Image (cartoon, rainbow, N blue to C red; front, side, top):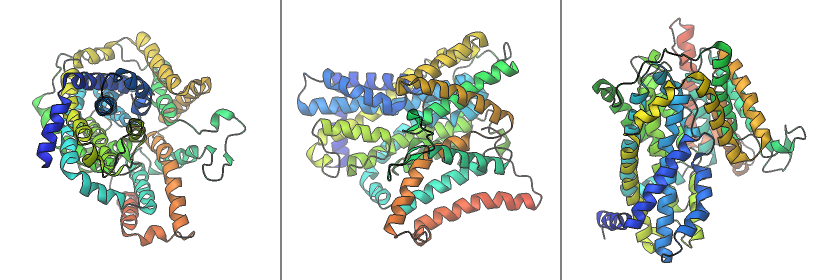
Length: 508
């Protein structure tokens, strides 16, 4: 059978009434998971695995596995849609890959353009879902073969490039941005060393043994920091936000967003293939690319619609790309796909090269359900844009407690720890002070995310080379990544030394 015939059979599976119900509930729950700060797709998928097992108890083993994976996959990519909502309306990332959306999405909302930002986010997410689905159908095996050839040296260099790129992008001062990157990497070392088992920077506090949870820091820095800014600077814009009359984006908005959506989708798809990179890195890279190629980079951080369209498309496309190594090679490329792999194994299905041969109904049913799910998400999100947009018109006296409730509930639902509740408040104060003194927050949070992965890959590479650091230069792909990263930092410095004005993003 050809790929198209397999896909049509899969579509038949996805269109069965009980699977349509599972797709609907998956994407609906995923959207809610994305909207709630701190929960994220990983926790959402993990919490739902036992529930899906109960819901599918009356089906045959193959049907039960198919329906469950369809629902869990719906939660995964549905969360990418929902994460943009609170990022745009409340400056609160619903999940980690939506951190970048806060930079321009929240500024658009403050200008009374929340409807356009949310609509473009939904349209971009749908387009990215379809583009990544096409890639998933036709390019699974060859693209996975490329991604799997990346060794620890290549992954380490890719992450170095990511950190240097974001440090070259953020803040008025590159020195301050690099300082924040270093601080993020230092914070990432807190906890018990996974190799030696030695405590690092825990100061005898048991809650620090597992390290700092990224979302606790991100929610504290962005959401609670915004609360402190509103309270201390009276920056609540009462009566200043224009009434939102238009839900759909204008023709100019669509024109400005079309190319960023396409670029973000393609970039996100390819980054999603790489283990460890995922939606977070994809959204950061997409934003950087748009800013670098824009004719008006000064708009970014001040409400540029391209700054919403590209990263939102990228993080959705990355979730589709991440399914390729999982389905065709049995290698999870992110935390969420690792949990999905656990769900496969729970149903006695082994993801990998034999999945399409042994379980074609499941494999193609899940792929086809992603098209149905993306269509449902667009239909669900577009009519609700005005409802979501009205949140930004809420007076500060109601909005501030709402942000605090979202933040506290989101963090406590994941950690079940009062220590983390204290930590988000502390991070809120630190975030406010850093922002007030022009220290960008984006490099810090990216350093915190990539730190453990960088350390792990560096150790693996050095183990392979018997401690020889030249391995990072001897591997051609690794060398290319390092050279690009070096140029990304040095070219703006050279231009500055020559007296040319280098515009960087002032948002953190």
